[in-house]
Image (cartoon, rainbow, N blue to C red; front, side, top):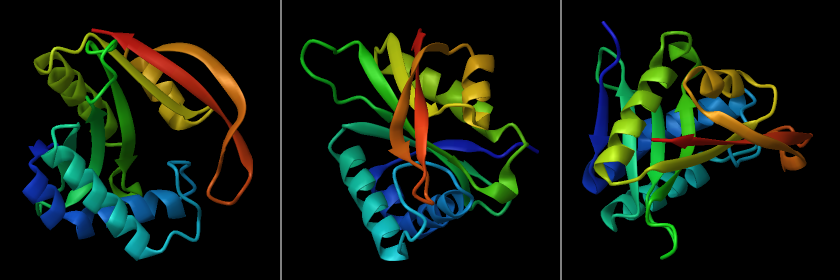
Length: 173
C-alpha cells in the first residue's frame, strides 16, 4: 500500500519535528545537497523544522509529509507560497526529502503530484525549484513535467564540502 501523503498543520509539524529531523538527517548523511553540511547536528535539524512549522502557522508555506505503514514520516516537501507582491501567482517547491529506506517506491513522485494540487488550490500557476545537476532528483523532475531553465556552476556545496552545480526548473500549472 502506498505511503499516505498529508498536509500538516503548524501544530502537527511542530509535534513531528523529531520525525522530520530524522528524514533530513538521513538525507544529508546520504549526501543530499539540501542546504546543510555533513556535520549537521540534530539540534540544528530540529530548529529548522520548528522554523518551518512557524512558517506554516503564518501561512507562508504548506508542508506535506509521506508516511510509512506505522504513520512515521518518510518523505516531505514544502510549497513556499509567501511571495513578493508582484508574484502572487508563483510558489517555490522546497526541501523535497525522502528517507533512504523509503526510496524507489514512488514517494517523491506522489509528493510532487500532491504539491501541484496544493499549489492549484492556493491559486498558484507557476512553480519554481532547484536541484543538484546530474542527480536523481533532476531526472525525477523532468519525468514529472518540470522544464529545466539552466544550470548554475558552483552554486552550492554538497554535504562533504565539494562544489556542485544546480539546475533550476519551472512548471506551469
